[in-house]
Amino acid sequence: MSGRLPQGPTSPLSPRELQVLGLVAGGATNKEVARLLQISHRTVQVHLSSIYGKLGVPNRTAAALLALRAGWIGRDEPGDSGGALP
Image (cartoon, rainbow, N blue to C red; front, side, top):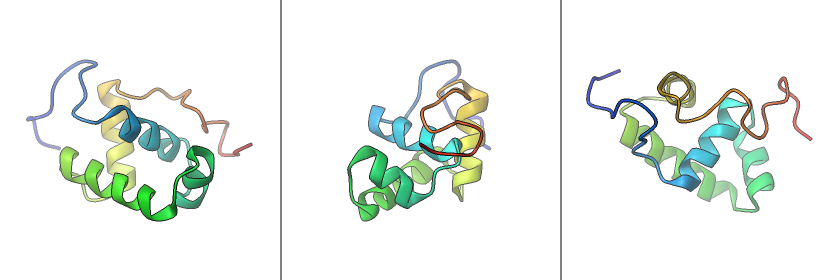
């Protein structure tokens, strides 16, 4: 993880990207994220690709870890119910 990302609560991600990443960090699959946010599966993929590019990470695990450590998302994000979604 490079040192080029903002420190503290400032995130390079849009509010919608943070919403998607919060659900992903809570264990949601792309299909579950699409259903919960009422968007297409393809839109979820586009958001994730954008997130990876902005954060300079290769995958959803690295993106979630970086965002959690930076404080951009919390462990109590919607969809984080111990691995089970509503």
